[in-house]
Image (tube, one colour):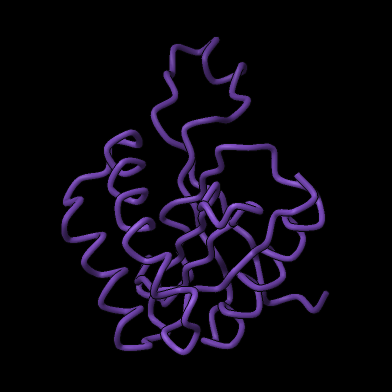
Length: 153
């Protein structure tokens, strides 16, 4: 597992062109698994941003020693409540992610968002500890996570 690498998908890197078809399949599989609508639109947006070198979509892959994608992170520029934010659309891994790669991915994601002038990053997840709400009869469907980027750190 120490041979895992984090790669920011960019058209200037030859290896990324080799990885892109595999990433497209992976994104489609995970979109279906996550219950995301408009799968073709999502993967098309990721591919178009990659091919054109647009910074409106930021994509990272985690690759093992054999060159296979074993994890990915996709964030998009989005509007939320009238403001531009970074929105993590997919975050998935097939293997345990070492803390160093987690830290690198978070650093790069934060740098992308700050570089775009965003004050926050949002992410939907299906997992959260919501026992108190459940006792009141609520059921968890999704949970919005927010990271404030306005504070220096």
